[in-house]
Length: 305
Image (tube, rainbow, N blue to C red; front, side, top):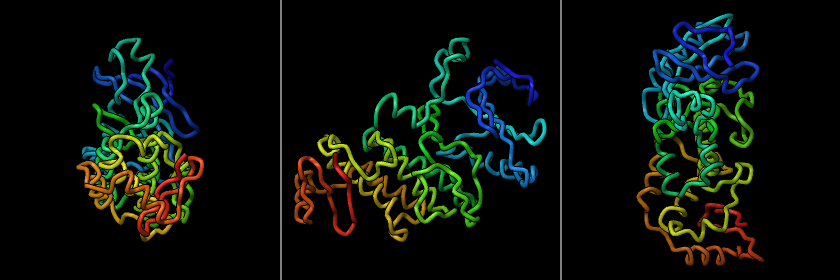
């Protein structure tokens, strides 16, 4: 299932994993190791030298926590930029024909679909790792612009943010690049755009619901054993990250990560019964199993179904 075009020296393409108009992703073998090879074709108006310089920077940054490593990169064919990366988790019988034929990377999206939503504490731990990755990008003058569960790939159990095709600099004209539902309504190309998208990403991982259903919460979460210790806090953090008022959101990946650390360690909060009383006092009662909870000045905490 290989093709003869766009061959990279020393890299054997084994199987096409995905293909779009301007990109192709292959399972490959390089120096005896199973790898992932990605080919991308930049827009005509973009200088190849600028793209390579950006990947020089990203390759160095990707050695840090929370980012998917780039092992090598270059140009092949006519304006095709290649990246060589490790293979993510979920490769059964590594290196065998069966493994090669069946491999699909374990992303946060696929993990949620196959294994169900994760607990609040686990999501808080994953979120901290992704905040570390975003922090590395932001401090280096870059924004990812496409944070979402499908672009979070597990590597030895560790979530890493990958797919650097839309990485750019803050402040550029907003062009609606990215994915619907992960972009803030005001439409910006700033570091806050990544943090907003991270909030929606964690929402999907925790609730199992689509980001367009935000801020609805499954009733089961309120009744879960970890609601009072971890769930309530995660709910507040996600709501803050996606506040309608831009000024009330997290100002940095570090601030977001610190809030998630508090969720992980289980900062003491009111009980579920006390939380429901808060909603009742605020004049928001449950009607036929359907209601909205509010916290002090924070707006809706979640629409329960």
